Length: 540
Image (cartoon, rainbow, N blue to C red):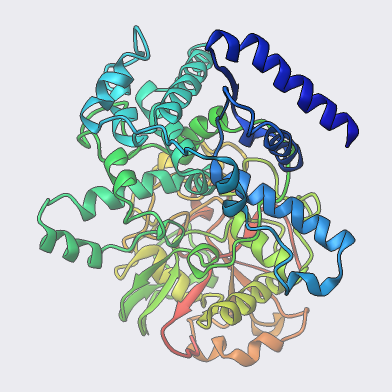
């Protein structure tokens, strides 16, 4: 204490002899105080308090008042917990951060935002030569009016663009990169969703264009009611700035929009912008709009199930072809992904798939179908999903799966009756491993909009295949009674039906009618699943 008194006295004498006598002022500028650790920032403030009453001495502090106020409260809460009686918290022991700052900061001053009419000039002036003439427009419309944030974001973009130019084999388009960088800095929570599932950026742009394409509020409202945005995007579809950013350019303009890009093409932008970090499990997000898979509606009615007797590529277990009547239901638009399955694993402590490290799925495969899934794993996930959501989730029956895959008229493949290796992840031209769900959309989708129903992974259904004594019928044609819930208790010696083929199979084995079987405790890297959501309790 004696040292502080001596220091104050000497400091006042210095000010008096060198500043006040010459009619000057000493101005001390402390910038970025909010970037210090909370305890260090408070120490600086405590030191400054010692000199507030010294004439001709002015302290200018550059800080975020909310950040510093929280730091003050944290520091003094820790002091109170470690040194004071437990009941002092209830007696107002904690210091109020904003009030503490009011006693120190005598003249608060906020840096004024840039006039909106001048933001464009400010952005254009930051760079002599832009990579594309529309890049400044992205930052003008997508970054608000904070000059520091605009300049910082533009600098990050320019650095990343220089890196991108060196990747000639996998080109990055500058305007698309500018949009992703803008999202990363203004909506980091949205960016975190998109970097796990890049196709959602394409889906978000498509939804916003469709929902707001008329410019008339009434018609736009009707369009939004007809459309069904992916659940994970629900918090962002009404944000005006996001809509402006993603609909900034006409849909027909090449190289500036995201519609039409595959998940792998979209991933390039998130790989480039993602911060280097050690692999870690994504935080568990439990709101309904995050953990529930996206589904598509399958209307009630009849469809043709199985293969025609004349089809030489079809086995006897697919015949005869026959009509099946089904009520309305919803089915997963995609197979359940690693990111979706991870929430289940972490909340229930269910064993993770064998290709994961603890609870962490392979890097950059959050949007791939989860594999090494047994029939029991899949049914456990559906049970958890149903309890968590309060809805009737379960595995699809064979008939539900097949109708969603081929439509009402019995198409051979989800997209039609003609083979096209470009529309499916199969042995012909696929990469020899799983691909992100939706990689072959929309060209490879079914008439109802379900994706990946040919190839990628085999998918469990709820149906019993039947015992060996049932040959050659294998409980086929389909009988709705074979999907009753009592079948869930069948032993591990009773095989279950798999549908859809996988990346390791060829054209005849990725048809909509293809049927395979395996024991319910079997797992490998070719098998996943998708869910069905019934509007009522269904025996199908």
